[in-house]
Image (cartoon, rainbow, N blue to C red; front, top):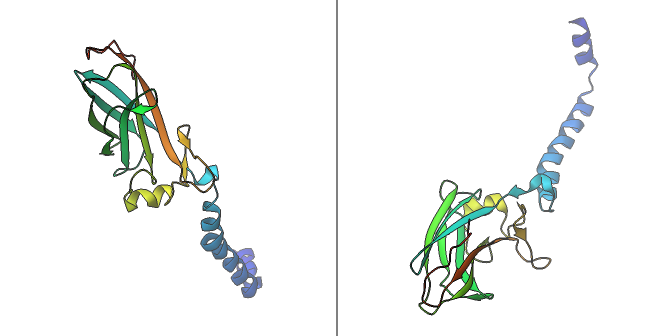
Length: 176
């Protein structure tokens, strides 16, 4: 007990104040500054895992995701890199979302379901941008990409739906 009392008596208040000021400076200035860089320490890992089933000319999409609740995700069906369905929007709730996409009667061939998330695709709620950044700069994970420096990060995932015949009957799909 005497050692502790003596150490406290010998403590230099100026040095203690300087040390506290440096710690506060580090927390207030350096952490926000460093968080603007794409460092793994500050990334929010996020993925989308869509599953799709055919119901006549409707593609029903059910997806799980670790995006924050309220996140806006767009999905559409493509053939040969050309959209063949309307783009539909869904909001993430409790780790998932679902939607239905209608295929035109003339659609046939090999189809792919594409789902995208990002601030360039849709206006995201503030609760989402607070976590991922205004331009998705804190997004991380295997599905995250950026087209060019300064362009917002996005999540893109494509799922092979298999083929649909000329009469509109789906050929068995391996979509998951």
